[in-house]
Image 1 (tube, rainbow, N blue to C red):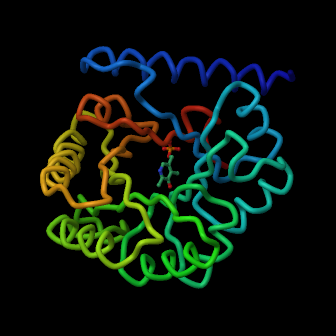
Image 2 (cartoon, rainbow, N blue to C red):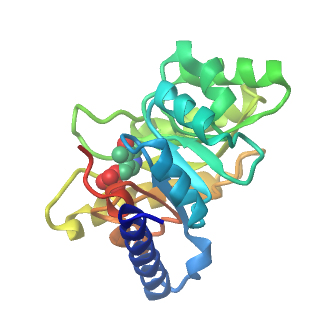
Length: 238
Ligand SMILES: *Cc1c(COP(=O)(O)O)cnc(C)c1O
């Protein structure tokens, strides 16, 4: 492995240790926290190295970029490496997205849900999705308003059999002090509990996808079991 590969290995193991420590601090098992390595802006060779180092879930935010890497790396759905869509998904890219991604983490509107459902049914295999919740007031962040999430999930479960809702995804605003993200993550967690308590047939709140490089430890303490980390593993994006 080259020098950059060694650096990658070092950063990855440091992140894994911090994930473990945060899990144990919050009374959970390290292996219950899923690490999604976010590889936007990272070239295929690096992504392959990360996979060789044991990364088994890749997050991308653009269909085209993900497709190019998947072609280079040659591992698609069912290969043991999961590909997660974490960015805004245009409805006209749904078909292409379903050829690449195992999980759509950015389900944020009905139109997208019905499009995913239609294509997933056509291919004969449901698609797993997390509902993206808008927990901050930042205009730039997408996601469903928290007050709409329960109805949305109920309606998907009732009307769209091609779509399986397996959890929620939330992005906290950026703060220099990650401690300040805590109330945002807590809001997502409470919403997840509320949905669980509604016992909607076919809906399991299996994942709370919360936490990025700057705030994943706080997110885990607040109940996240899926963290999406880019910079912390691959270094600063250019
Ligand atoms: C880029 C991105 C991440 C990773 O961000 P880092 O700060 O580099 O860890 C996580 N989630 C989403 C939705 C992203 O777009």
